[in-house]
Length: 227
Image 1 (cartoon, rainbow, N blue to C red):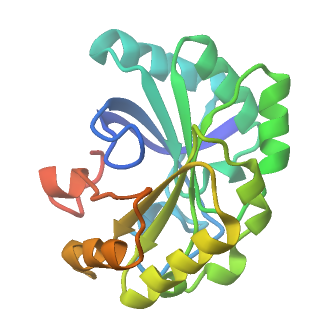
Image 2 (spheres, rainbow, N blue to C red; image 1 turned 45 degrees about the vertical axis):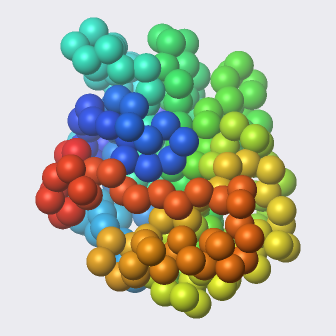
Protein backbone atom coordinates (compact mmCIF):
# COMPACT_ATOMS: atom_id res chain seq x y z
CA UNK A 1 0.00 0.00 0.00
CA UNK A 2 1.65 3.17 -1.22
CA UNK A 3 2.24 6.62 0.19
CA UNK A 4 2.29 9.80 -1.82
CA UNK A 5 4.24 13.06 -1.71
CA UNK A 6 1.41 15.62 -1.69
CA UNK A 7 2.58 19.18 -2.33
CA UNK A 8 -0.86 20.79 -2.15
CA UNK A 9 -4.55 20.13 -2.65
CA UNK A 10 -7.41 22.46 -3.44
CA UNK A 11 -10.75 22.70 -5.24
CA UNK A 12 -11.02 25.02 -8.21
CA UNK A 13 -12.08 24.93 -11.84
CA UNK A 14 -10.06 22.99 -14.34
CA UNK A 15 -8.05 25.70 -16.06
CA UNK A 16 -7.28 23.66 -19.18
CA UNK A 17 -7.97 20.40 -20.96
CA UNK A 18 -11.26 18.86 -22.04
CA UNK A 19 -12.85 19.52 -18.64
CA UNK A 20 -11.92 23.22 -18.57
CA UNK A 21 -14.34 25.27 -16.51
CA UNK A 22 -15.59 22.30 -14.45
CA UNK A 23 -14.94 22.05 -10.73
CA UNK A 24 -12.21 19.62 -9.75
CA UNK A 25 -10.20 18.55 -6.77
CA UNK A 26 -6.52 19.04 -7.54
CA UNK A 27 -3.96 16.76 -5.92
CA UNK A 28 -0.53 18.13 -6.75
CA UNK A 29 2.40 15.79 -6.15
CA UNK A 30 5.97 16.91 -5.57
CA UNK A 31 8.99 16.24 -7.81
CA UNK A 32 9.33 16.13 -11.60
CA UNK A 33 11.92 14.51 -13.84
CA UNK A 34 11.92 17.44 -16.30
CA UNK A 35 12.89 21.10 -15.98
CA UNK A 36 10.94 22.95 -18.64
CA UNK A 37 12.24 26.42 -19.36
CA UNK A 38 8.81 28.00 -18.83
CA UNK A 39 7.58 25.78 -15.95
CA UNK A 40 4.97 27.60 -13.84
CA UNK A 41 5.19 25.24 -10.83
CA UNK A 42 8.95 25.18 -10.25
CA UNK A 43 8.37 25.27 -6.50
CA UNK A 44 6.92 21.74 -6.70
CA UNK A 45 9.40 20.01 -9.02
CA UNK A 46 12.79 19.87 -7.28
CA UNK A 47 14.02 17.24 -4.85
CA UNK A 48 13.65 19.80 -2.08
CA UNK A 49 10.03 20.59 -2.93
CA UNK A 50 7.77 20.79 0.13
CA UNK A 51 5.31 17.95 0.59
CA UNK A 52 3.38 15.93 3.13
CA UNK A 53 3.55 12.14 2.98
CA UNK A 54 0.01 10.78 2.74
CA UNK A 55 -1.59 7.38 2.26
CA UNK A 56 -4.12 6.54 -0.42
CA UNK A 57 -6.80 6.38 2.28
CA UNK A 58 -5.97 9.89 3.48
CA UNK A 59 -6.17 11.22 -0.08
CA UNK A 60 -9.52 9.49 -0.57
CA UNK A 61 -10.66 11.23 2.62
CA UNK A 62 -9.70 14.59 1.11
CA UNK A 63 -11.64 13.65 -2.03
CA UNK A 64 -14.73 12.62 -0.08
CA UNK A 65 -14.74 16.00 1.70
CA UNK A 66 -14.41 17.79 -1.65
CA UNK A 67 -17.42 15.87 -2.95
CA UNK A 68 -19.43 16.65 0.19
CA UNK A 69 -18.42 20.32 0.48
CA UNK A 70 -18.25 21.40 -3.17
CA UNK A 71 -19.99 18.73 -5.24
CA UNK A 72 -16.93 17.96 -7.35
CA UNK A 73 -17.10 15.14 -9.89
CA UNK A 74 -13.52 15.40 -11.15
CA UNK A 75 -10.13 14.88 -9.57
CA UNK A 76 -6.97 16.02 -11.34
CA UNK A 77 -3.68 14.39 -10.36
CA UNK A 78 -0.90 16.77 -11.30
CA UNK A 79 2.56 17.85 -10.26
CA UNK A 80 5.42 17.85 -10.47
CA UNK A 81 4.99 14.56 -12.33
CA UNK A 82 2.32 12.27 -10.85
CA UNK A 83 3.64 9.15 -12.60
CA UNK A 84 6.71 9.33 -10.35
CA UNK A 85 4.49 8.43 -7.40
CA UNK A 86 4.61 4.75 -6.51
CA UNK A 87 1.25 2.97 -6.51
CA UNK A 88 -0.53 5.73 -8.42
CA UNK A 89 -2.76 3.12 -10.06
CA UNK A 90 -3.92 2.06 -6.59
CA UNK A 91 -4.95 5.65 -5.86
CA UNK A 92 -6.72 6.00 -9.21
CA UNK A 93 -8.74 2.87 -8.47
CA UNK A 94 -9.80 4.14 -5.05
CA UNK A 95 -10.75 7.59 -6.37
CA UNK A 96 -12.71 6.06 -9.22
CA UNK A 97 -14.52 3.78 -6.76
CA UNK A 98 -16.03 6.79 -4.94
CA UNK A 99 -17.45 8.12 -8.19
CA UNK A 100 -14.82 10.60 -9.33
CA UNK A 101 -13.61 10.99 -12.90
CA UNK A 102 -9.84 10.76 -12.56
CA UNK A 103 -7.55 12.82 -14.80
CA UNK A 104 -3.76 12.45 -14.87
CA UNK A 105 -1.67 15.39 -16.12
CA UNK A 106 1.63 13.90 -17.27
CA UNK A 107 4.68 15.41 -18.93
CA UNK A 108 5.12 12.90 -21.77
CA UNK A 109 8.49 11.60 -20.56
CA UNK A 110 7.19 8.62 -18.58
CA UNK A 111 5.92 5.42 -20.29
CA UNK A 112 2.15 5.15 -20.01
CA UNK A 113 1.77 1.47 -20.92
CA UNK A 114 2.83 -0.09 -17.56
CA UNK A 115 0.78 2.41 -15.58
CA UNK A 116 -2.35 1.91 -17.69
CA UNK A 117 -1.97 -1.87 -17.52
CA UNK A 118 -1.85 -1.61 -13.72
CA UNK A 119 -4.95 0.61 -13.77
CA UNK A 120 -6.72 -1.95 -15.96
CA UNK A 121 -6.10 -4.67 -13.38
CA UNK A 122 -7.85 -2.44 -10.86
CA UNK A 123 -10.85 -1.86 -13.11
CA UNK A 124 -10.20 1.80 -13.84
CA UNK A 125 -8.84 3.80 -16.75
CA UNK A 126 -8.08 7.45 -15.92
CA UNK A 127 -8.30 10.22 -18.46
CA UNK A 128 -4.80 11.08 -19.65
CA UNK A 129 -3.78 14.66 -20.42
CA UNK A 130 -0.28 14.34 -21.86
CA UNK A 131 2.13 17.07 -22.84
CA UNK A 132 4.46 16.89 -25.78
CA UNK A 133 7.34 19.21 -24.92
CA UNK A 134 8.32 21.54 -27.74
CA UNK A 135 11.70 23.23 -28.46
CA UNK A 136 11.18 26.19 -26.11
CA UNK A 137 10.86 23.81 -23.16
CA UNK A 138 14.37 22.41 -23.85
CA UNK A 139 12.97 19.00 -22.92
CA UNK A 140 11.79 17.59 -26.25
CA UNK A 141 14.56 14.98 -26.33
CA UNK A 142 12.98 13.38 -23.25
CA UNK A 143 9.63 12.66 -24.90
CA UNK A 144 8.51 9.02 -24.84
CA UNK A 145 6.86 8.85 -28.26
CA UNK A 146 5.61 5.28 -27.74
CA UNK A 147 2.95 6.92 -25.56
CA UNK A 148 1.09 8.08 -28.66
CA UNK A 149 -0.18 4.53 -29.19
CA UNK A 150 -1.65 4.50 -25.67
CA UNK A 151 -3.80 7.61 -26.09
CA UNK A 152 -7.54 7.05 -26.65
CA UNK A 153 -10.22 9.37 -27.98
CA UNK A 154 -11.12 10.22 -24.37
CA UNK A 155 -7.60 11.56 -23.71
CA UNK A 156 -5.91 14.87 -24.48
CA UNK A 157 -2.59 15.76 -26.09
CA UNK A 158 -1.35 19.23 -25.15
CA UNK A 159 1.31 21.33 -26.82
CA UNK A 160 2.49 24.27 -24.70
CA UNK A 161 3.79 26.86 -27.16
CA UNK A 162 6.07 29.84 -26.60
CA UNK A 163 7.15 30.64 -30.18
CA UNK A 164 6.51 30.18 -33.88
CA UNK A 165 9.14 27.43 -33.83
CA UNK A 166 7.03 25.59 -31.26
CA UNK A 167 3.95 25.87 -33.45
CA UNK A 168 5.84 24.53 -36.47
CA UNK A 169 7.13 21.59 -34.45
CA UNK A 170 3.66 20.82 -33.07
CA UNK A 171 2.32 20.62 -36.62
CA UNK A 172 5.14 18.23 -37.54
CA UNK A 173 4.41 15.97 -34.58
CA UNK A 174 0.72 15.87 -35.43
CA UNK A 175 1.50 14.92 -39.01
CA UNK A 176 3.90 12.19 -37.91
CA UNK A 177 1.89 10.53 -35.13
CA UNK A 178 -1.72 11.41 -36.08
CA UNK A 179 -3.12 11.12 -32.52
CA UNK A 180 -6.74 10.03 -32.15
CA UNK A 181 -7.32 12.04 -28.96
CA UNK A 182 -8.29 15.69 -28.48
CA UNK A 183 -5.42 18.07 -29.31
CA UNK A 184 -4.83 21.47 -27.69
CA UNK A 185 -2.38 24.27 -28.36
CA UNK A 186 -1.78 26.25 -25.18
CA UNK A 187 0.26 29.48 -25.07
CA UNK A 188 2.94 30.10 -22.46
CA UNK A 189 1.39 33.02 -20.61
CA UNK A 190 3.06 36.25 -21.73
CA UNK A 191 5.44 34.61 -24.23
CA UNK A 192 3.32 34.32 -27.38
CA UNK A 193 0.23 36.15 -28.64
CA UNK A 194 -2.74 33.77 -28.83
CA UNK A 195 -3.87 35.64 -31.95
CA UNK A 196 -0.68 34.48 -33.68
CA UNK A 197 -1.58 30.93 -32.77
CA UNK A 198 -5.04 31.30 -34.31
CA UNK A 199 -3.48 32.56 -37.55
CA UNK A 200 -1.13 29.60 -37.56
CA UNK A 201 -4.04 27.20 -37.13
CA UNK A 202 -5.73 28.80 -40.12
CA UNK A 203 -2.57 28.67 -42.25
CA UNK A 204 -1.99 24.99 -41.47
CA UNK A 205 -5.66 24.01 -41.71
CA UNK A 206 -5.66 22.63 -38.17
CA UNK A 207 -9.42 22.33 -38.02
CA UNK A 208 -9.37 19.52 -35.48
CA UNK A 209 -7.07 21.31 -33.04
CA UNK A 210 -8.24 23.62 -30.25
CA UNK A 211 -6.60 26.72 -28.81
CA UNK A 212 -6.70 26.64 -25.03
CA UNK A 213 -5.97 29.54 -22.69
CA UNK A 214 -5.24 28.74 -19.05
CA UNK A 215 -8.44 30.05 -17.48
CA UNK A 216 -7.02 30.30 -13.97
CA UNK A 217 -4.38 32.78 -15.14
CA UNK A 218 -7.08 35.15 -16.34
CA UNK A 219 -9.39 34.76 -13.34
CA UNK A 220 -6.64 35.14 -10.72
CA UNK A 221 -3.12 36.53 -10.69
CA UNK A 222 -1.01 34.36 -13.03
CA UNK A 223 1.45 33.34 -10.30
CA UNK A 224 -1.12 32.59 -7.63
CA UNK A 225 -1.04 29.09 -6.13
CA UNK A 226 -3.95 26.95 -5.05
CA UNK A 227 -6.33 28.02 -7.82
